[in-house]
Length: 219
Ligand SMILES: NC(=O)c1ccc[n+]([C@@H]2O[C@H](COP(=O)([O-])OP(=O)(O)OC[C@H]3O[C@@H](n4cnc5c(N)ncnc54)[C@H](OP(=O)(O)O)[C@@H]3O)[C@@H](O)[C@H]2O)c1
Image (tube, rainbow, N blue to C red; front, side):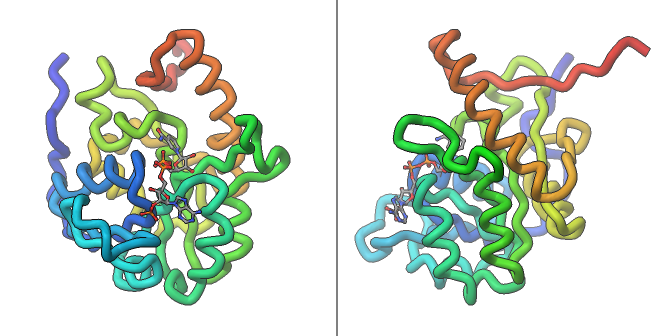
């Protein structure tokens, strides 16, 4: 089977505000720019960040000017940092990729999730959790990374916000049939708690570039 190298859909350019300039932020920026979107980074030190290939702004400005905001902040900084940005995030769709882990790599929210905590702290923002179940290198180039199509998940309370994120995922190479809408934001905990299995499998394989594919039973 031959897989397409680029999404076939016609992309409506959005301004993507990526908060965080680390592994995830850079990977999403590369994929978003390749799909024709405008990218700005939000950083704590924007004036020094001339190395990113896209403009860097203070976090609030990057969020306020974006059509779609991406949370790519380091895990335990997400909740306090984004809560302080509530005004800039008012009415925005927030694609949350974060996984909040303790220093010992346990779950920071064992009976909840970062996605749920963010939605509760930001009631005027539409939080959609996705892309947190795979390594950053695969997030924006799944068809180049994996030998077959694989599955990516979405969790969020707002259907229109999930449609926006689903279209963005398609721009990154995730076909609609490979996207699984798990339901409301409470399902984000399944995605985040999956990190425990992800790390165990990666440790066993000594390789973190893998993903799972949903396989349905024989009809
Ligand atoms: N790496 C992966 O493969 C992967 C996979 C799945 C999920 N995730 C999740 O995605 C998120 C980002 O991961 P990452 O690997 O990109 O992290 P990272 O490389 O550590 O980068 C995170 C960025 O957050 C900003 N930051 C760091 N400390 C901060 C603080 N105290 N307050 C505010 N901002 C701070 C920094 O940007 P500035 O210095 O420019 O401010 C930094 O570049 C995490 O929640 C992680 O669990 C990562």
